[in-house]
Image (cartoon, rainbow, N blue to C red; front, side):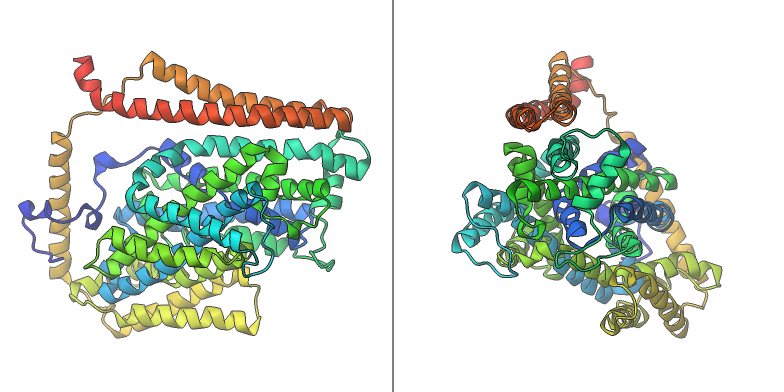
Length: 578
């Protein structure tokens, strides 16, 4: 992109390459919804059970998850959001300005790898629900042991791939209404299984105090012993993972793409909707559900997969939650992988690159290790992109404070930044080297890797011209930015004001959807607190299963219908109100 661009030429530049216009910025409610939806997903079943299998204690879980997720929120708030709000650019566009095309190509390859692995894991998770329904044995090895399971994965995977290619917008819209239902299900699951856990530990189905809950959790869920009976992970490991689980998006800065729409820096705190109400509650709930299922079916938690756990906790609704949550998460990440691949293979369409990446994803999904080892895989994936986040942080925050010039690569019109590529490479060698030497828990590897990469990049950038001044180029960029603001203001003036008119039928549909969720919670509470003995518990649980699946169907029909009507009403409102 040249710096001397006439106003009329700005319209020919892709919107992705320009800062987000002021009239397109979003309020805090938008980000609460996004993060609540993205971080209550199928992965929570895996992580919740993983903490149980790794042998964390209950105190470590309650305290460690709280601290770790708060640290994650603070990372978004003080690292990701300020850069996103000040630049209004995605990480990809920012990298082009500070590191050139070669760096962005490497970054896209990293994205293809990361999102392919996540998509594969989610396809496998969805397949566990279908496996359970078809009575196919659980897959406990790193490789598949049943050809029917492979067939199920291939069938689920092919559907995911084609939806990502042709129906992503529909799935994206559907995902929006999933978040409230998912949260209700994760809250209901522990309520349903707690009486069974209580009976196995204290000999009664009811809890009389908080100490009963702590005792049951410590004895039957988070015991402090791993699957082999050895002492498990401690508080620091729990904090480390819950902080590191999303390093890809906060310290790795991928969420600049979302947060560039934020009106204020403080909106980074909205990520707490995903961390505290999503990860914190969902991971604890999944742990209780896993332990409760183990008691009911008389198996170790390591012998269970998400399909087993969800069905025992929620009945048919449980199978729906695993399929839907896995499916929607897989589609979103496969779509991202396809976009990253298209940026590498520019002569191919997004559909074609999505198909190529999707076929590889489906093959990987046939191997169960991709979800049983998801916790370390995500941590290592974060380590892969943390150096990129460090480079951007150095350029944006540190350079102006030490007299260096931000965007010096763009000012010199370089297409390749040796300091950026070398800093990334050396950061990876440093991080994975620490892991190989076992000097530090791999949950915390991202911290020294981040600082190391910053130091290396600052030193190398100085040697290549970052410490010089480029007044003419800076003036041209400032002029260009001013023209962009004028162009976007003209665009805003020409766009019709959006008026939302919600009809009575739409309101009724929304009310019905909300009522179905409240009814689901009410029956879960009834099972938890009004089951005096095992026969009463089993009766209440069966009643919840029947009501739960009915309310699930009612919720999705009415919520989706209401959402579609709101879109139509929004489009027609100006004409109808005139």
